[in-house]
Image 1: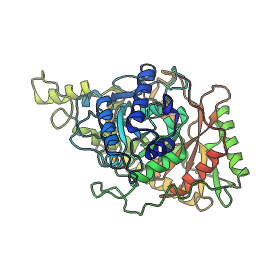
Image 2 (image 1 turned 180 degrees about the vertical axis):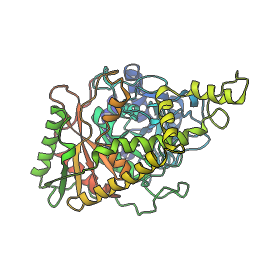
Image 3 (image 1 turned 30 degrees about the horizontal axis):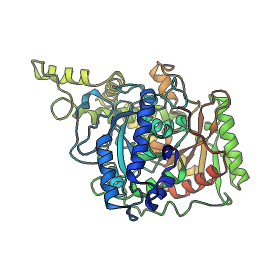
Image 4 (image 1 turned 120 degrees about the horizontal axis):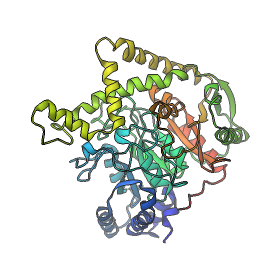
Length: 485
């Protein structure tokens, strides 16, 4: 029982349902693992020890419930999903003592399915970053190499799953914030179609880009979590009323016959580390051996994606974060004499450097005289990027490429914000187009020994097909080990 934490979500859920493992045993296994590894990994802002044990004891008293697919399964949440009665910080000092009075819809659905929430994960402040070095509280380490970053902004979620502190975690993906830490930490990360999962209760960074998704140790685990969370929510006007398919039904296929995979030339060229290219091309070759047909194609507007993303995301961030002013929400400087001083000092003390940088740039591109030159033009390019994908999907079922140009880098290696922004080159287009994408671990880099992720992207609401292909490939690759901690 001491190594229950090595099980996948699917395995532990089956043991819980059969009564071979109690909810208390499952939760205690994760809490013990947190005690053993958290001083080095530092993945969690809040550990909910008492609440989780109390919940597990109550569940054991009632007995296993077959109608709840996640009965007794310990799960961690990124700390920008509101949780009733539990602190939700967004990785920011401005929300240091914020305790919501309601659960996000995704959290409610997990609880209704029987999941036990054991912690809230560290993150880049307000999801602004690609390495979790921008958290206002502390840096999280990559469980594979504690000197390296876990990726961001859902770095705490990625690290906690990779370290065995829980069976799955939720992240959010605005420009790659699920897929990046999933790739760096060697786990599965799924960013669903925009609108597939309700964003109600998600503290927004870029409202037209943010999407909640699962981070797990297997594709089947991701399918199980998506099954629970997907669906229309009348509380979220951006939630799409599209029927939810059975994501588990398509798993277990024997081969990839009849599947066409597009390989965009822009994702496989200059700037890609040799070890990443080698691991990803090996995975693509395995897909071909399983029967998939591959076709070359071009996503010719990829080079404009980063500029477009940062104009739109920062514009939306400057608007969304205006509510944190010390009056309506957030930290307040109570020593200021004048109202304007209170606003200024509260936001200066509460927000970190990266958040302030993005608010300033977002306000600039929305200002009179510059709106048409920047924001309006970026919105037009965004539409063209979506058309680029639509044409590509006339030639293939899914697109494959690396998640990132490199494996996880050392902490502090990228001090120039522009350098950091550029690592998102392969993930951002997916968010601008509102399409689903996922990261699947395909091995360890030959030189660094760090995990490499293969990215799959598809047409809107194609998650079932994407999961089916990914699970077939996963079964035909060498199993991904857990990092030694």
